[in-house]
Length: 480
Image (tube, rainbow, N blue to C red; front, side, top):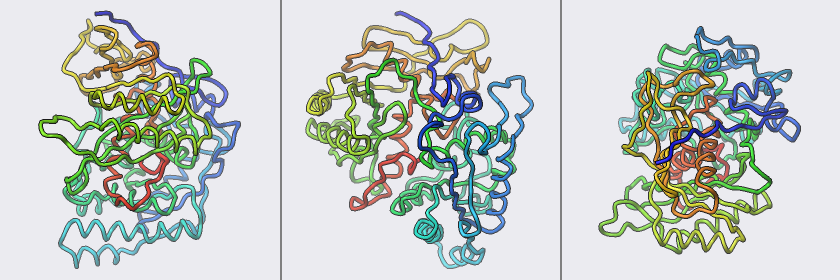
């Protein structure tokens, strides 16, 4: 076994490079500084009157610096410099009374008083917001719409406690504080967030679901500066901005995609979702795959050779339509093993589209661990290679830039299996590490999974709320 430490990947910004999104934007501005970008982001706001006023006041506070919390780790908890035209993002949020749509208390009360079925209650609340989303989309053309929820609504109707009850990574403090209730409500009933995002797609405006407690975060939430960082970065991206980009090793056009499987809501079929097949700038498309049939004895779903071919071929066609260029190299990520049929299908589609460099990579959980002397876990970027095809990578761990391990639990590595590869294993693992930094919902860069797989999971969660007749949006901003 060979163990080495990978360099922390650099990100590109408007006028320079940094390993940290917050530092990069603060000093070097967003990546798209000198190109077409959202300098004036039109924001629509929907919700109960008091909650809307609370969030709008908080948005105004975000125009100025939000001080860092008291800490001995200033790089982990930096101040937010303010979202305005004169520094950092060099952009501003704009709105007027016509962009604000307030929902009456009586509208909420009426639904609760006349309905007892939980799934139906959620549908009716979604319809309340959809009515206003439709109005704003058709009459005001905002770049992003904020759907504001009160804490009372979240706790009493959606049944979600104030304190997060689930930890999706190793550290709940790193999760975004606007949509963090996504996972908590069972899919056996309607999930408010997923249903709203699915139904809102037809109006062609990305939405951001916001809890009104964002203005006065409680102790278990992120600190105010971190919330402002994550919120403003996400909205900048949803308004078609590019906050940062991966640093390229050469001029080769490389695309990355993640493939995942999700079960339909009636649990009768399993479908594939291909994540945003995207380049180093985060530009690309999302495609929904066809249903598959699990064979008797199968422990994990797999595509047939034909399905693999069609999924990738269609994805590349959509990618070309959006960006007018085909990639020269393609990297496919899965969380399950590749079957022989999948490998043959993907290779055939890549060859047909004149892609002659293809890497098929599985990234999965593992019970294997490495131990380091001292009180801290292994460093982020620690790579243990068993042979050319099997590797162990720590995407989370001690981060020298932060001078700490920014997590609450012992970090777990991921196992990386290379089923077919044209690039070196070390470069492929370095790219995985870089892709963990491409989540524009979060500016703390030590994520566990690459955006390819985070995206494919989130896309699948929302696609299951669309009918086969509905056309999904191709941009990731509609799913995050």
